[in-house]
Amino acid sequence: MRVAAPAPAPTTATGTRHGNVDGQAIAITVFSAVKWWGRVVLPVVFLAPKVAPKTLTTLQRLSFIHYARWSLVTEIPHNGAPQPEVKLRYPHLYFESNFNGGWEEYIDAFSHVLTRGMWTFWGSSYGFPSALPTAPFKAYIKRNEMEASHYYSAYPASTTTQVRQALELDPMVAELRERAAGMDPDQFAAAFRELMTRAQRCC
Amino acid sequence: MLLDLGAIRDPNRAGQAYALTFLMPIVPGDEDLLRTELEALGADGVSPLARLARTHFGRWVICPDFVTDPEQPAPDPLGCQYLIFSVCIDGEPDSYLAELCTELAPETRRIWRHCINAPDPAEGPELHAYLRHNQIDTGLFYSAYPNVTVGEVRRVLHQQAALRMLAVDAPSLDPAELQRRFLAEVR
Image (cartoon, rainbow over all chains, first blue to last red; front, side):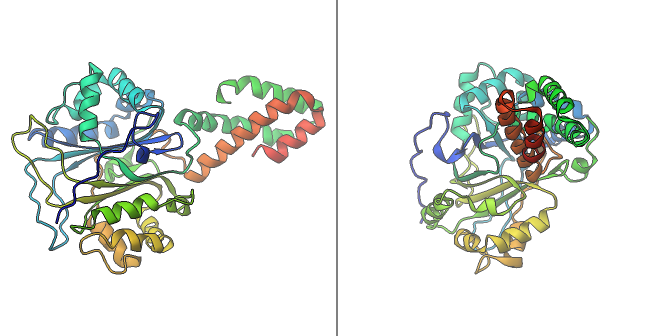
């Protein structure tokens, strides 16, 4: 007997469902069916950032993504009966992201900053309406999105920007720590003030 | 940014980070029971994944079926519902999975007993092998900080917070106290 999926839970203030949220972190999980030529094009798209890492620069400008992944699913692993043998008619694109901020803002920024890149990733998916305008694209993602039943972040209170700033701050602090023991208190106070000036945007 | 040879050799990798994704069939009729189990995880405020110190992010998702787009010539049904389990981790996948299948055994037994032909009990090397069999390779894995471990992220965030607090207190501290607190607290 098949059990129908439950009715979607109401969205939270972040614009997504409760299960997709852990503190500041938000999960997106999406499958989309891919046209035949996506089977050829997407592996090339996936390879490009690895051989030419500069192509990821645009993605890095989206400073609210911790981790994201794309996979092209062409077959479903079989485990024996009673699992039905699945012979997929189409490849399916799996996308997941771990980001911070609101769901709407995430899709808006993704669409505006990565307009061409979006087509590169989803142009071969059935029904992809193009990244702009954003309303049809948001509707497309909502139709294909699944809610997490459990979602975890190891640092739920922190945004991607906070993590990056903290990483940028680290060598400056390490440098002062190394010198601090050999300084007299007045020298240290001056060095501390200088650190705080240099590190202003990392705090 | 340098060429990521590790990611070329293994597309699940970005720097030292690793993407694991698994897709497993759910026993027909067990979908609601599994959903209840998953939603109860972390009911005490702590996710079981917090016990695996190498986990940056993780999720369990129940996929009822592939959505059929109106443009799609024909549906592509999965035939049963599937459990997606995915994690972003530090380092090598096999040692992580070994930890998952032992440290989280109380939870893995309750979760994977609802998956078709998962080992019974769902733990240890048998579950490890079952997960590997159902792994989906990543095409492209992106990380904003691919060479930074969970421990490092937490350390620098803690350091940043400590420095911020010290900066607030600094105007009222004499230089010797400022130096003492910096050395004691900002690390």
